Length: 378
Image (tube, rainbow, N blue to C red):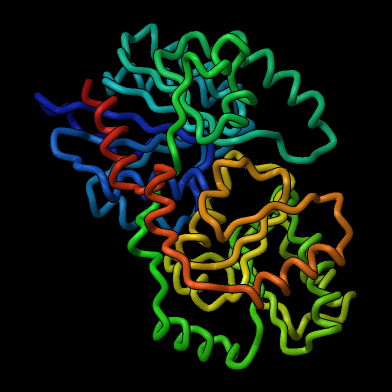
């Protein structure tokens, strides 16, 4: 643990907990929220089981946010529990905000309640566990932990109805006790900028091309292998097509190998992570999001804010389809149907006031941040 500061009188001390801190969707939600929140009277500490390289860390540290790492690995369950118990005893938090993609970390609500933390928020950001040989066992542990520990929370939040049903028992996921908290974004940041589009396309040698894009961790969940298969069919018919993948992850090597096997390596750009995702979105023509599961799918919301036709799988929650630019296609549909939909979306592209539509669906980060601050300060 690092960055421990002395207690300051008259301040609300907020602990925001996540399993890992890197450059994923939960981290983007936390960063967006805190960057637009009135932090006066608040001391914000982010606690993670493992701290890794992140595009969000520097900006938050500049705002006075303090980071603590527990054991360095989510697999060290006992060590993380002991370290967190010690930390919560030392820091005397007023609010504990748990950001979750599975239920087991809610065991740490026990020491929080024991130490008298008055506001204990369990916040679901997920609808399924990642593929692995032990997923069946992990799902059973997840369900047991949900029933044992979710009742220790004082508040139950979720980014979608599906995320609530996944994380909380039926008694709380009925809609009567949990609150939907949209993953707010700075809508004005994503308003289309033609000059920046041209600059980015020139930088990436995309001038005169048709760009299909995706933003997300390169992993099983985001299903970029399926997207490469779709793209290979489009590329065979449209040699000017390019695929722009923004993100990093454990599937990078396998995806590059697949691109080589499909003879499309020269048409696929693996960009990596960025703190300027809006500029990459402006460089795209169509956004494709074939995820196998999503808590919400904030990347799809950002794509709509950027004015992009957005094609989502039927596994993406309805809450993410927040404008007339978005549509869903079944993952069971043939590749040809996906390819036709992508080409149709490009041909039918029209200017749409997505900012207004997304505001109506609650995605304005200023509104979301004010709502969360209201709970922190109650």
